[in-house]
Image (cartoon, rainbow, N blue to C red):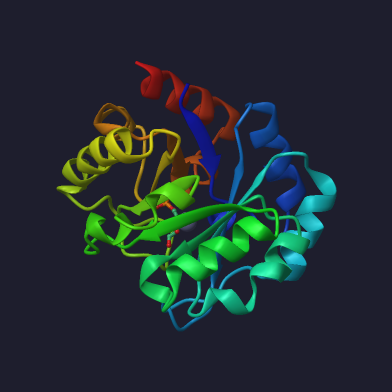
Length: 218
Ligand code: DX5
Ligand code: ZN
């Protein structure tokens, strides 16, 4: 079954509780939370206090996407705040294996994200240690950007790699996914779909999620 992970980056921050209740009612599988530091990406977003507050009001697993340099400085804090999946960017870690190991040791589910231009070979010696790969299909930093053409091929190549090397790894795709392209993204091999603007900027959040799921499941 395809999993849907709404990215709250596009939610209404003055009414986050309502937006979270809406996506819960649409049976989403996890909440995707984008953390940006203004260095790894040219934007600043949500941090630890907000995640702690969200944890108090929802049972949904929290999928923390860390777009920050040297994420090892904060792994413990994000796990203590309630993070379940902890995704670090390969490009942001000098010692990726050590960071992944520490996420696992502290009780999180380690996941590695790749920017659009980063080759899949960076996963070669880490794929057996992780639970998920997050493939960026836009350059990270902002919601509402367009899916980069040609990324279907990368999804497909990653799916093959996962099947060969560690089939337990989930393939998450993040950036520019909408009603028009979700079915292609799933056909290419995605297991978990992150969607921000397509969900929260639609008129009816619940209906949009149902429709996305329907298209995803064909
Ligand atoms: C981008 C973030 C995404 C973003 C997705 O840097 O990682 O999670 O919120 O937003 P949409 O679905 O609008 O591209
Ligand atoms: Zn994200």
